[in-house]
Image (cartoon, rainbow, N blue to C red; front, side, top):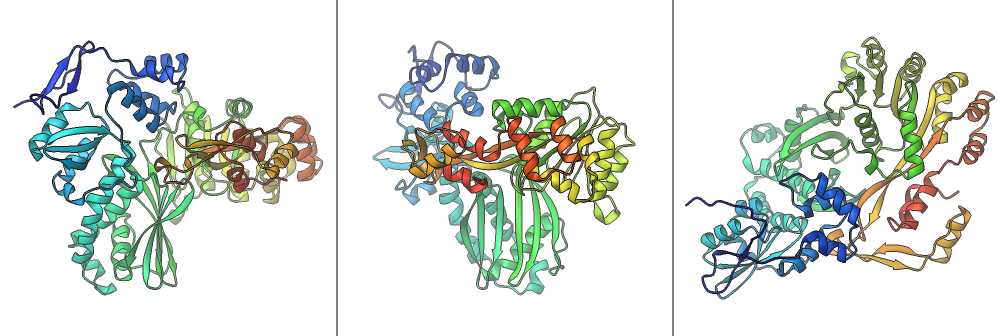
Length: 578
C-alpha cells in the first residue's frame, strides 16, 4: 500500500497509543509554535526569528534552520520540542541499552530513519528518534517488529554514535575473527579479495566523520596499532588493533589513495574521495616510515561544509572591518600566518568566496587543492614535473589574473614573484608559517627580500589560532581566579565572571564543543613602513601596532573569554601573555 506524507497547516499528525494503536490520526489541535516557545525562553530574539523564517527554504524546518545558523544548540531544540509536542526527550549517553533489541530493528532501517530501540514493556517498543512526528517511519517499524511504538526525542549525534557502537562494533568483532594472520608478502593478494578489511577501514572513516574528527591517526607501536581521532584540536584514542592487521590496513588505505603499496621506506602523500553516510568526504593521506612500521595520518575535509561565509570565522568587529578593507584593495599582499591546523586555509577560502565574482579572474596555486571552488581556477602543485609554487605563480601572471592565491610562501623565489605580482596591479593572498603577524614581516626580510619591497607590497598580515568553544549545554558561570584577574588587568581588561563547561553528554564530558578562531590583524601603515625601511626591530614595529590600536591574539582571546565563548586556559594554550 502506498503511503503519502502530507503537510497541513491547521491539522497536526499525532500518534495515538489508545484505541486503534499504531495508526495515525489527525486532530484539529492548535499547538504552540516552536518560534514562540524559543522566544519565551529567551533563546532567540524577534529579529533572529524573523531573519531565519525569511531565509530558510520552504522544505526546511525552523529548528533545523536555527541550528544551521548556530542560534540554538541541538539540546535546546530537543527540550523545546518536548514542550511543544509533549513527547519526552532522552539522553543516550550511558543509557542501559538492551543489545538484543538491536537484532529486532534492522541496521539499515535505523540508519535511514535515524532511530534506535531503547527498551520493551509488554507489547510496546520504546525508540529514540530525531523526528518523533515521522509517523511513516513509526508505522513501518510497527509492521517490522510487531510492537506498538512509543517514540521519544534524542539528539542526532547521540543516535549516530549509538548506531555506530551497537550495530557496527559488533560487526567489527566479527571482522577480527574473519581476518587471518598473514605475512607482509601476502598483503597485496589479500587486498584484492578480502572484504572484512575494506569494511573495517570504511568503519574507521565513518566513525571519524560521525564524531566530527579533523584527522585520523594510525600509530604503529611495538605490539599493536593505535587508532586516534583529533576532535576539536585534541587527540583521543579510539581503539587498539592487533599488530597482525597493520600491513593489511596500510595496504588498503594506500590502494584507496592510489599510493605505491610496495614502497615502505619513504613518505608518500595521496588523496581519497569517497562518500561517508551519503556525504562527500575528501581525505588527504600522508604516510611516514617509523621504527615500528608506517604511520598514516588522514586529514578529513568535509566537502559539505560552507567555507564562504567570512562572518562565521570569529573575527571581532574591528578585525573584520580591517580585514575586509585590505582584501578589497586592488593590489598588494595579504598574508595569513599561523602553524599547521590553525584554520589558515578556511580563512583564505572564505576571503576568495567573498571576492569571487564573474567580473574578476581568480587563480590559485595550492599544495594540495583542499576545496574546489566554483568559478575559481585552481592549480595543484606537482614538484615531480617542476610545477612548484614559484613556477605556478610565474605562469599565473601570464593568465591575466585580478586576484592570485598562493597556498604558502616558503622560499625567496616565491615571495619575490608574489611581490612582483602585487606591484603590477594584482591582489595576492597567501599563508606563511610564523608565530604572529609581526614575525611575518621580519620573516620576509630574513628570506632575503629588501625592506623597501616588503613595505611597497605588503598590505596586512593576519595571525590566527583555533580555540575550543565552551559547550553551550553545560556552561556554568564562575568567579575568576586571582591569576585570571591579573592576566586581564595586565592587558587593560576587566573580568567579572568566567564561563566554563561542567561536562555533559553533548561534549563527551570535556566542557568544550566546537572551535573558533582568534585573530590579530596587522595593517601596514605609512608610519610602520617608515620604521621597517629604517631597519626597525620587531619591538619597534610592535610599538607602532599598539599605537594603531591593533588587537593582538591574546587580547582577542581574552575578549572572547569576556563574552563567555571560551576559557582563559584555552586562550593561554595558543597565545602568549607577554
